Image 1 (cartoon, rainbow, N blue to C red):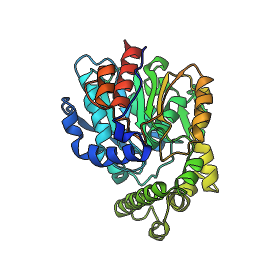
Image 2: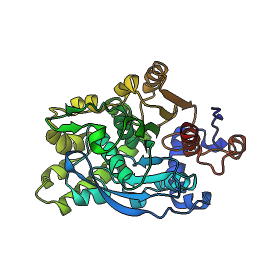
Image 3: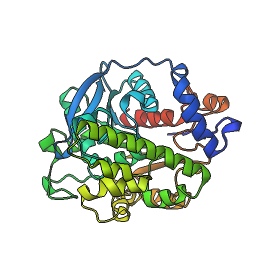
Image 4: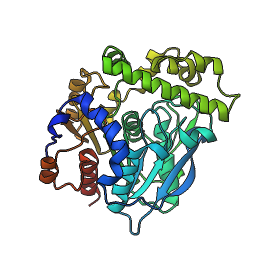
Length: 361
């Protein structure tokens, strides 16, 4: 398959500039960029790993060609995640069934359960169980897992899982059923396609707080994480310590105060080492597309060579590494759109849908 090179408008050839432009401009104007209408979503409550209820939306077109299961990044909820909703519109218009969900600790899933996030350790199984339930609802295989930023890490965990007849779960003593027990077959799982996935939280957080823009973003994310925690406390007051929430003053301290103890980790470092997606790449056995920008201002640039090495060693991974694009940006110039014959400036989603269409065709 031929992939066209990526180029942004000239004034967005900077990682910080395109990241801010996408977050500020696109969030207000994205609907003007697409002619695809909102799919006719139905609300559904899935049951994820550890019997955690997961809130989601499901839309099934006539004669669907496959199913996309996706979620978003570190904070937010379905109603305000416009970038994920954009994928839903474009994918449904191209004949895919679409399943979008609030992951653990987010949105309406947080109203249903006080279970906090685990950065992929349990969310990978959530993806699989959502796919199994969606299949029973009429969504066809192949199932393709997607996400961006931290959501991309979750999707990589989903496609990394090994499913024996019955095996002890990787974390704790929970029993993980085989795909057959869930109603899936091995060939039902297509693979993953992710944009700017988080790959090494420990390195990237250390890098982030050393940069002026990074410190600004870290504080903004921390504020949103605290709001998330207070919402969980309001819905489930006996499940979370309000004094611990009050002590949170960084992303690191959020995980230290609220996340690692229930997961059984003694330190944030151990938690980040365990949940890092970079370690998963050499062993992925399903087709995987990773779109990543060298100028992503949220992640340590030293990760890029490690990403290249891991992907080069695994023929199941297609890496689209671009010079520009920022963090979950990749807005294309008019010339780039014409060259790729894209209907809109959303270069990354267009490449993912192109890749998926080639995989299911």
